[in-house]
Image (tube, rainbow, N blue to C red; front, side, top):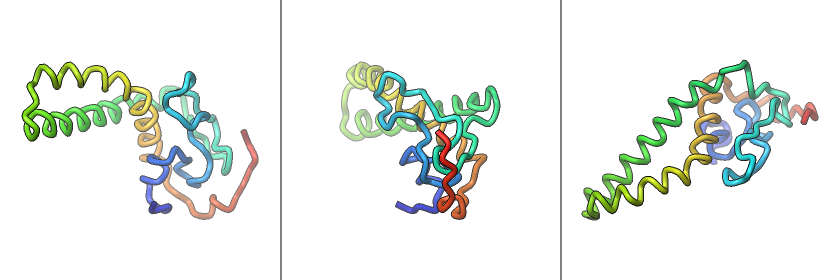
Amino acid sequence: MFKNSPLYSIVWNKCPRCHEGDFFVTKSAYHRHFDRMHDHCPHCGEVLTPEPGFYWGAMFVSYAYYTMYTLATFFLFVSWLKIDLDYYLAGLVPTLVLLTPYFFRLARRTWLTFFVSYDPAKTRLSVGRS
C-alpha cells in the first residue's frame, strides 16, 4: 500500500512521521487495553501525544466515521436490499458498539496525521525509545 501516503499510517497503525513504529501499544483494537498509545514513536521518537487535550478533535473525526458507516449501511441494507428499517436499527446498534474500539483508534491516528506529515528521512533513523 502507498507507503508515502498519509493513509498508510492511518490504516496500518503506524507513526505518521516515519510509517515504521506502532502508534498503539497493542496490535488489535479488541484487546483489554485498546486505548494505550506510545508516548513517542518506538522507531523515530516522534511525540504521539503532543499536548494534554490534543485528541479532543479526534471525537469529531470519530463522529464522521460513525456517520459514514451508518449512511453506507443504511443505503446498502434499507435502500438497496429493502431490509425493514426496524431490523436495520436492531442490527445497527450492536455493530456500532462493537466498532467503538476500532473507530476510536482510527480517529486518533487520523487526527494526528492532520498535523504530522510523512518524512522519508525518518524511516532510516532509529532512536530506540520505548
